[in-house]
Image 1: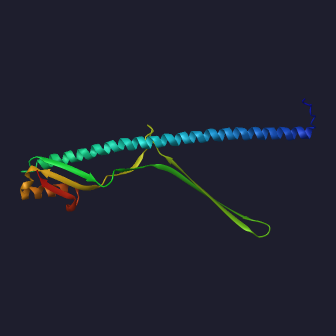
Image 2: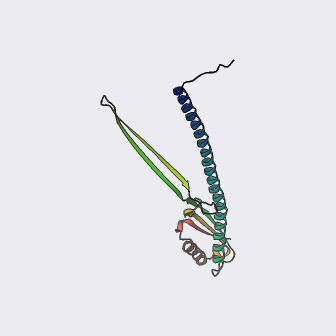
Image 3: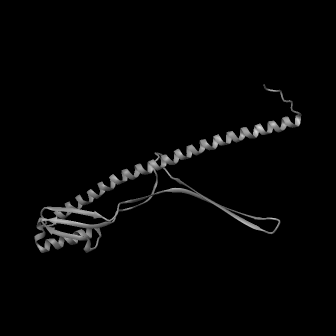
Length: 188
């Protein structure tokens, strides 16, 4: 069934070289596949940590928004004649968080000229972005952009009096640094 094949020395060297090259190719493919899987896992973990931080940030932002309403309510109730006060603040957008990235870009240009005078230029560029994380694997935040206030509604029992209403109106503008058209004060 199988015949014994006799190779001379030159053919043995070629066969061994081909087998070594084939083994190196297989090892390289396995290593590349393993490294890509590791990078994808790393990217997935980073994306999950950013999503987790955004969720935590959203609950923190809503808590801060509620705190701002409570603070404003408390301070407006201190105004003489204001009585019972309720405050509602609306926002134009939510808080934006910008995480830090390490990025590296490479650009390679190759020019070739063939024997008949033709010229070819090939440009290759690549960019690699990696999320920067702290020791606890949380992304490092470069800057946080606060939510923009769209409008404020104040309802107070003392707002029947024009002077109290004007004082509440000005107090909200001053406290939140917003313009007058964004504030409405009504009587209870």
